[in-house]
Length: 337
Image (cartoon, rainbow, N blue to C red):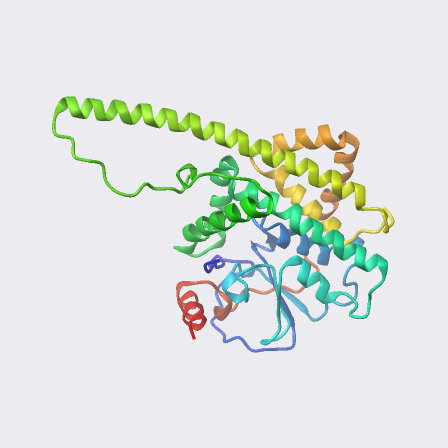
């Protein structure tokens, strides 16, 4: 991914220009602003919930050396991905699943732990891409929500370039990983056709040209609607299949009253999918597939987590952690060294 960056007026007020000095604190970088994780990143939402809610029982008493930074800067990550845990200048761990495994007991190899890891891998592979599909490839969600969020999170001009690059990456991921054959380039709301129209020399030519363009635009619009309907049906089918498989394996080895990281990640994904502009169709699908009682159980768990405040110390990103133009160029230059 290309670089991304935080708002000038992020969580704790004005900018800092202090150099980054390693203090021994572990720093957790998330997508978000104003002390809250952003719904453009299900992994950031899930990690914020997991760490800050005492009911999960995760990292209890072990968070005194962890600080939270909503840097929105993927350039800090070795693989261009947030969330990111910076343990030291030499040790960086990216992705919800990798960060969770980092904090696990290194000597733990119990059946229960292995089962937890398998469930987490399942959600990462089968549920997270579906949320990214809804965020970036569902035209209604992308136009009315996702693209607008980047303008709140990033410096110019990255607030335009980054979501476009994400769309391309998510499209490729969905095509290969989920077999969701999405959208020709021409169907992309960010697409601008190359080249210029041929010059029109007469009034008759002008009239014919305008008529042709109007008809072509109408036909293209209908074609887009058909493609969108097909893609959304594919998505809903994949979501139903993934959730049915999840509930068939979730309680094989682990008790129902044990909240595990995979649960929280799944809830974060469902929460985002329900909150998006096209969320009503998702709610209808889940009600049909899971039943109203199961959906109410899921939303109750989400409600318990989504409004919680951070229990971690947080700070504004330092200048070296920001994704402004200067630091973006620095990171790009370093990548070629």
